Image (cartoon, rainbow over the protein chains, first blue to last red):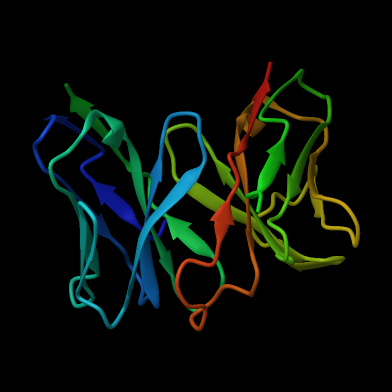
Length: 110
Length: 119
C-alpha cells in the first residue's frame, strides 16, 4: 500500500502565487523526500528532510515535517510557469524502498 | 558523468509479445532499482538488484516479469506475454551505496523512464 498520500490531488494557481501541498504517511520514517515530475519525464529530486528535522529550505522551496502528525508540506513560493508539474512525496523507512504517494498536479497559469 | 540511461524511452507492444527494458546506471553505481508508475499513480517499487544478484524482488509480479543485472552491461527488466495492464512507465534508479536509514542525502538517481504501451 502507498505510504505517502498527497493533498490536494490537483492545484491551479496564478504565476507569482504560492503553492502548498501536503503529504501524510502511515508508519515511522527515517526521511521524507519530495520529487518533481514533468509530464512524460523522469523524477527530479527536490529536497530531503530527515525525521529529526522540522523545516528545510532550498531556493523557492520550503518543506516542513511534523512527525507527530505524520505529515509534511511543500511550499513553492513565487511560482513560475516552469513549476507546472506533478509533485510526489516519498518516504524511506527501515530499508531501501522509496514509498511514493499518488502526487499533486500543479498547474501555474501565466 | 551521464545520468541513469534508460532505453527505449517509448515502446509499443501487442498483447502476448515480450518487452525488454534496459537501464544503464550512473558510472560507479552498483545498486539498481526498478519502479513502475501506472497512469495517475505514484511509483511502486518492483525490484532491487546488485551486480549478478537479485536482492529484493518483492514488488515484482510473480509471473511474466523478470529482472537481471549482469556483470557486464545494463540491467534488463523483461516482461513476457504482455497484457494491457502492463502499460505503464518503468523507471530505473541507481545509487552508489545501498539506500537505507544510514544513507545520507540524495544518493539515488532516477532515469527518464521507459513508457510501455500494450495494444
